[in-house]
Length: 83
Image (cartoon, rainbow, N blue to C red; front, side, top):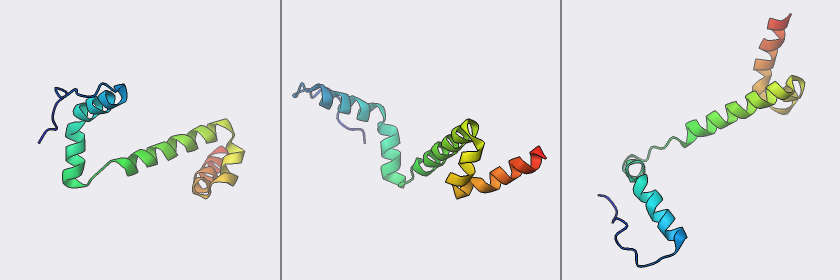
């Protein structure tokens, strides 16, 4: 079931029109989430964490190992490979 289109433009608030357009463009994904309850938020969160850790490691390798316990095994591997 698709939402009503933008033919009902009673209100001319730009924010509401933008919201309506966005919902209309992404309706397939919204409907899939509402039907299945499955979202990709956890994978997006993991990707963000990995990118952040990689950026921090690139900037300053010594400070990363003291900040996050999850990076310590990776830091140990890097040290072993460098020996």
